[in-house]
Amino acid sequence: MKKWIKVAAYSVLSIFIGGIIIFFVWSQFTYKPTEEALLLAENKIDEGNLVFGQKEAKTGVIFYQGAKVEVESYSYLGKELMNSGYFVVMPKLPLNLAVLGTNAADSIIEKYPEIQKWYVVGHSLGGSMISRYAFHHENKVDGIIFLASYPADDFSTKSIPMLSIYGEVDGLATVEEIKNRENVMSKNTTMHMIKGGNHANFGMYGEQKGDNASLITPKAQQDETIKVMLDWLQKQQK
Image 1 (tube, rainbow, N blue to C red):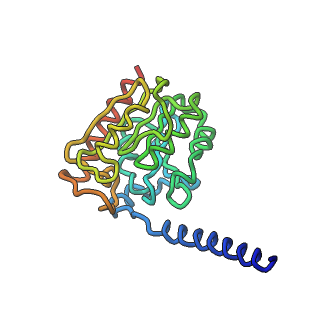
Image 2 (image 1 turned 45 degrees about the vertical axis):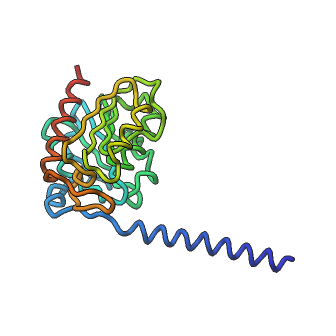
Image 3 (image 1 turned 90 degrees about the vertical axis):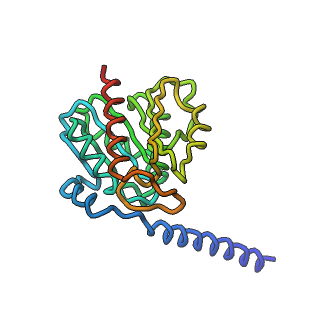
């Protein structure tokens, strides 16, 4: 009897270890930033985070990357927000998965006490996970921006400002999915659809498995995203 128990235990352990190995190997196949994105990220690394702007700014933005997308892929968004006077921090999350670093925003907020207001932004899985952080730390977050994403928790009874930007032809966070999750958004939500936009063009890393071909260029989608974000952020300051 003891022999069979040992065999079963070893089998379970082998499956567990095998699962960890498979997960780790899978996580290494990342979406890498374009050369342009890498150039924009040069000299922007501070203690493992990608940082744009001056910490003396009044308003800060924390950005969580999409699943398996290397954070430098979003450097264009960081640069443009910086040029408009915002302080932007994009943490390099464990294995490029926001689900493994949901509370990364905590140490960032603590590190820069000069910042008066913090807004959190996330692409895809990053949006869901950074909204989870906001859900449990309402006193630290002044607003949430979703890029091809939606909340992981129910904000329907809350009034925290939210902005949802999504692509018309997104194959991963489809318009139908976004619409179906509107019921868990806060009472103070703004929705914006980018005509012809897809999932991957919120960053600069090329095509993404399962996505649809965009009807506009990556730059056009990101420029519209930035404009909508800046307009919304400006309204929150009034």
